[in-house]
Length: 89
Picture 1 (cartoon, one colour):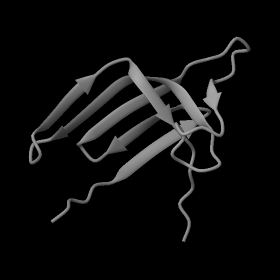
Picture 2 (spheres, rainbow, N blue to C red):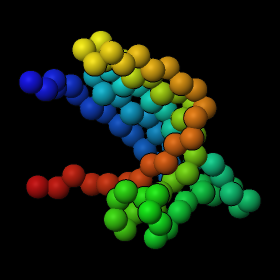
Picture 3 (cartoon, helix red, strand yellow):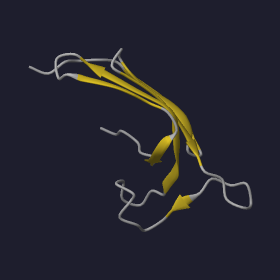
Picture 4 (cartoon, rainbow, N blue to C red):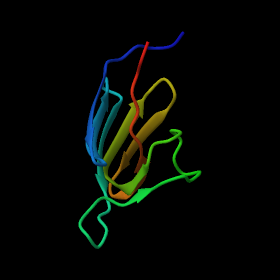
């Protein structure tokens, strides 16, 4: 049977934080272009959210632990791609 956990996240212009219970803690930062704006990809296979830009950047922190699955990951400054979405219904 699956587990339930609260999910909290805050993202603005590609920078944000994701927390899933005590299992996942991640920070995201977009790469900035020459104008100082976040680097985005449009109409690309790298965006998994149709119609939304993909923010290309890094994850200063990504920690994931699930003892039941044998997962214990602690990474810093790895590549990250994220997009915006809205839950409805």
